[in-house]
Image 1 (cartoon, rainbow, N blue to C red):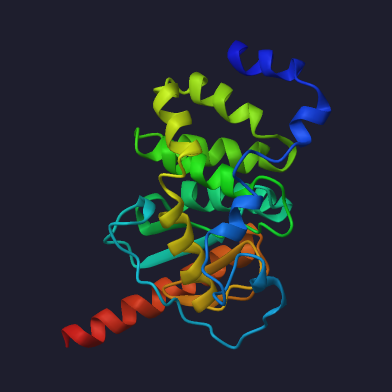
Image 2: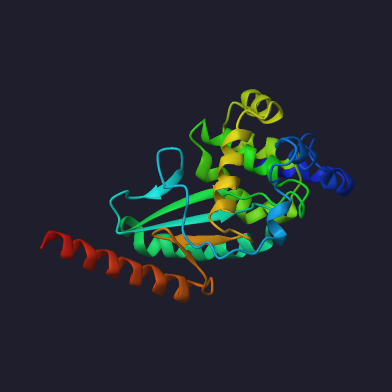
Length: 231
């Protein structure tokens, strides 16, 4: 991790600077009159169903044949997301092939300096087969790091850094991030993290016991429904 530690010499002021084309770029993602990434924070909703079905476009872990699919809408700079990351890791470790876990981006550009930059970094790493490594690192460190660290960790992961940087600064994957965000808004997401269990928004506590109990209940319901179909 020496490459990562060398970055610590950067000044605190530099780390706090918004990434070029990150937070300000959010205002240019949408045409006049369209919903922006700032609007969701004030729009309560009764929608509780996942609008965009899970598919090949998604980043997922686990078996697609699992009885339960857990979809998370998250923001890498969200402190709550950093805390629940450990909860999800523990649950996926316990359930392994019994759970299909999907992560979607929901960057709160109005609250944090670098959410778009981090989402785009994860997507850029994903095209080189390292989405989940970048995802995990951002979940653990996102609330405390600046844009300058992204390049350093790309080197640590062994990515083609030139390609990684070019795609980030050209916003190659912003359409994917936007689609995630818009699907979250349409599904009633009003904060991060927000989870959907088998397509239904989860409203309980996000701790291991509570979330695991909800997943197990959804699995039991799915099993009973499948048995009913068979007979």
